Amino acid sequence: MGSLITRTLQKSLKRPFRFLYWSANSFNHKMCAMDSESLGFYTGRCILDFPPKSSRSSTWYVAAAGFCAFSSSLLAGSYSTSQSEEDSEENAHDQQNVKRKARVVFVLGGPGSGKGTQCEKIVENFGFTHLSAGDLLRAEINSGSQYGVMIQNTIKEGKIVPSEVTVHLLQKAMNGSDNDKFLIDGFPRNEENRAAFEAVTGIEPEFVIFFDCPQEELEKRLINRNQGRVDDNIDTIRKRFKVFEESTLPVVQYYERKQKLQKINGAREKEEVFKSLKPLFLPFLEEELLQLTKELLNGIDEGDYALYKRLCDPSLTAFEPDAQGHLVEGLPFHKFYLDMSKRFPSPSKPHSQVSSPKITFIGDEVALVTYTRLVQSTKDGVPCVEAFNETRIWQRGLDDSGIAVWKLIHFHKSKCPLHRAHHKSKGSPHSCKE
Ligand SMILES: Nc1ncnc2c1ncn2[C@@H]1O[C@H](COP(=O)(O)OP(=O)(O)OP(=O)(O)O)[C@@H](O)[C@H]1O
Ligand SMILES: Nc1ccn([C@H]2C[C@H](O)[C@@H](COP(=O)(O)O)O2)c(=O)n1
Image: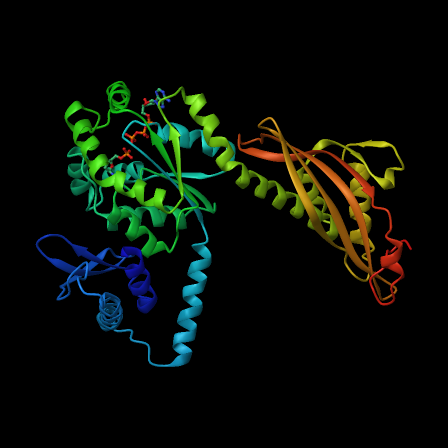
């Protein structure tokens, strides 16, 4: 119900307030609206029960959403009066959503369960950006921010920093990154964290990893961690365990109910734990390789040799129809064709499409991408299509700056047999070679 409220409120609210939520405890019920840029904070006492006791609760929520939208507009002095203003606001909002199309995996587990350790491995292997909520908060302390003392004291107490601070730091880090895949470690630590992140960013995680590990093991690891952290002492460790059980486990259970939880036994050797994580991330790698293959084909259609050179290993080997049964080695053979298509462009640029792709991994660093390539073009004003079966082998290695990149090391291309019946039907596209 909490997320329904925040979604309803967010929809009614649009902008300028990006963060609006109910803060309810046994003493009072507050309605809070927050501008996530300035961390400005507005609260007003709420006259409604939360959670509502009556069956007409949804009416209350809608009324509350309307009230919030209206009052926050007044506070910001930007109440929208015309349809066109509303439209352009909608567009700006959508553009912001594009930026928000990030994909997120949350990584949870007790203190010392190996979240940071495993995130490092995932980053190395699957191209994610790692954002540790704890690291961002520690960096905020060190930056001399006005929230530094409050954050430091909260961490020393083993407690959880208010969501508006943590979510703001996460959002800033995500917006400042070129990547669109994020591993968010140590977050959400409580229900408030979870609802605030969803309300501010509009993002739900792809899935949530939970490292399950007995407390005795965690305690041993934290005592031995030796990284000079203010919270790695037995007093704070015990407080953190309590906060984990009381506040974080309910979030874990929430994602379990939503069938988004991936529970991993974290009490094993580091490598064993990582082995269990790999299958969860393979779909991201498959997607990356397919994208890379499409980028390459597009480059070939465009006659873009610079792109071809960037994606291919200099000692690329190939079997392809133009080489008439010979194995071709290196890039010059291919450069000839790409340069030709640049110098003598055909009236209609060819357009390649990938059909029925299949990706197979051979170990961690080699992948086989097989598919049928359909190349559309026109010949004498008539649409034509050619089909090829292609197998491309990609290998991952480190580039000059030590970043892991995939390079094409071999491909095999053969022309598909013609489908006579199809090509004879009048008016349909036919093969260019027919
Ligand atoms: N599978 C493992 N077996 C043994 N030790 C481990 C394992 N995974 C991590 N460790 C060690 O335990 C300590 C805590 O690990 P790590 O910092 O990754 O945990 P964390 O979950 O990120 O902790 P926190 O929530 O406190 O930031 C480190 O010293 C790390 O080297
Ligand atoms: N969502 C979060 C994450 C972390 N903190 C604070 C409280 C934690 O004890 C501390 C260290 O985090 P870790 O490095 O163990 O992930 O940082 C928080 O308040 N909210």
